[in-house]
Amino acid sequence: MPRRTLLLALALLAACASHHKAGDRAGAVGDWKTAEREYAQALRDDPGSAEIKAKYQSARDQALAGAVGRARACAAGEDWECAFAEADYAAALDSTNAELAVFRRDAGRSLGTVRVRKAEDASRRREYGAGLTLLAQARAVTDDAKVAAEARRLQPALVRGAVESAEKLQGAGEFPQAIELLALAADADGSVRPRLEAVRAEYGRRLDAEYERRAAEGDALLAQGRYGDAQAAFEAALQARSGGRAAPLARYCAEMRAGQAAAQSRQWDRAAKAYQAAARLGVADGGQAAQDLERVQMRPYAIRLRSVLVRPSRPDGRPWVGERSRVFDAVMIAGQSISATGVGAGEGRALKMALDVANAVPAENRPTLVARVDAPGVPGLATPPRRALHATLDATVTVLANHYDERPLSIRVVHDAGGVAQDVGTVAVPLGELVSRRSVILSDRSILRLELDAVPTDAAAGTSSGFGPGQAVTSAAPPRRR
Image 1 (cartoon, rainbow, N blue to C red):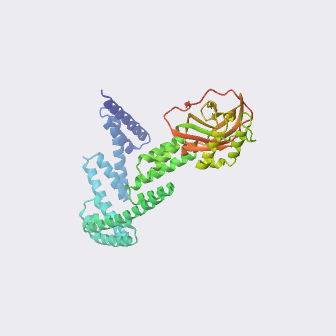
Image 2: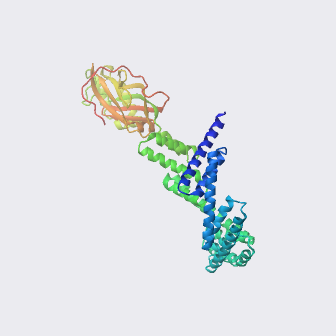
Image 3: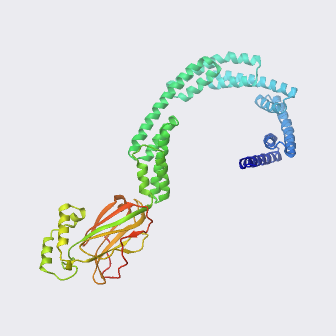
């Protein structure tokens, strides 16, 4: 047997069992109408079951007897609503019973008479919609000529009253109520239908105008990034008319709000899913959803240490290494006006002066620089020693981060003085700031300028290049974070 056929057969068996049990439960408490209905469905699902067939027949007999008894009791008390309902049910179970058919017809005539009388009372109270409904209900239960004649007599006044009331409701802007009344009047008198269609058309135009007004409000709020207010405006537009451009915009705002909330609670995966859902809606928002998705996604970034420039002397004016000389002193005098702020900001004149001074310092006075990286999720790394004041580092480490990552990337620069690490300075930057800006220049104490880049990569987190073996040097002083 094909899998699809087998699954269908299993589903039918499960449905049959469910209805069978429901019939048993109803029969146990004497609810024979429900039992008859449930067993009938079970028998349709499994027509070959002798057990279900027997239970259905028993429940049917009980339900039929009960309905006939209640119908006669209700008729005796002139409760024609009850009498007709029970007789109608019984006649459906035993359609060949002529006596039952006559009883149902007589109960229907009496009920129709009652409903016409109630319609006349409703007309006097100016409840025209209720009156027209009662006339329709009277015609539904009997074709008796007298009932039909009374209905025809009452109908013009009810229709006229309904139309007049609808006009007042229309004037008050209560279009749904007006349309409901006119629909009842049009069902009774076809000449009212053009009026009904005209009111429906006017209401449609008003809804369209309201839709566009609300949607325009949403557009303005969306442009301001006020997603909650924009969502409310688009949903208000959808209350005027379903569908249209407001539907995806309302969903878009909801997803953007969800993304923002998840990002604030640092639930990056949930935020990414929300922004992905927003981006798939294709809303023309300048790519905001895609931009926010880029910001929250945790992904590998290659952090590159480009270069470092340090002051030409220690804080006390002595060379980093070697003895002072007239050449060294002359260079120091020339470099006294170097501005760390200007150098760090990359101002052309200040940077050029700092580089000229660094290149002019005698080779024997230049430090041996090592940059040690402390990055989340990667072991301690150190660049190979370079004897220079301005050293190209060209070392890269890959970290997992996003634009909101507050974890610091710290780089300590030391001078390797024969196995003793003399502190030059320590710079630090939050990973989120670095990957957002893509390039930063940092400074601290004797570090005039340390350049860092961050670019997305396909490399695995923890991957590194351009670093040497760990430097076996002893710190002369603990590093200080800025």
